[in-house]
Structures are given as C-alpha cells and as structure tokens.
Image 1 (cartoon, helix red, strand yellow):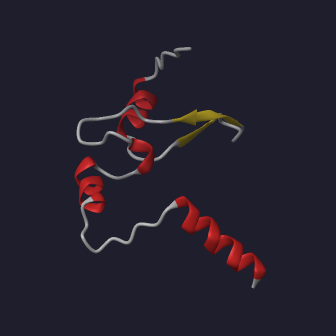
Image 2 (cartoon, rainbow, N blue to C red):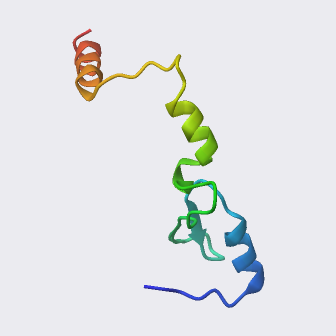
Amino acid sequence: MSVTIPDPTSAAILARTTGVEVELRDADGQLLGRFTPAPRPGMMFPELGVTDEEMDRRLNDPNAKWVTGEEVMARLRALREA
C-alpha cells in the first residue's frame, strides 16, 4: 500500500531520516506505524544505520573476530548453566 504525504513539512522530515526505523504518531501520541527510509546511495541497508563504506570496513577488518552460529549458541548454553 502506498500513502501520499500531502504536507511538505512532514514529507521533508521523513525525507531527512536516515538509518533507523522511525515511529509515526498522531497528535495524541498514538502509534500509527513505523517508517523505514528507502535505501539511499551509499547506504544499502538504512535500517542498520551504517554507510556502505563503514559496512565494508567492518567486513574487511583483519582484527575482527568472527564466530559461527554454533559458537554463539554454545556460549549462551554455557551462560545459562553457570
């Protein structure tokens, strides 16, 4: 479903959002829904809040320690048993 925002001020506020999901509320504070910005050049995954350049840097960091899903689950089990 598509909704057109006729108010230019509201449209401008939404257009400036970057990164994370934004809650949309009415004047009484009632949650209407959530807005996720469309991908922008240089930001393939806006919901993560990091640029493509930062994502590449993190993925190619030679000092990063990567773990498998099994390693994560084993650590969680160990924490539960402690």
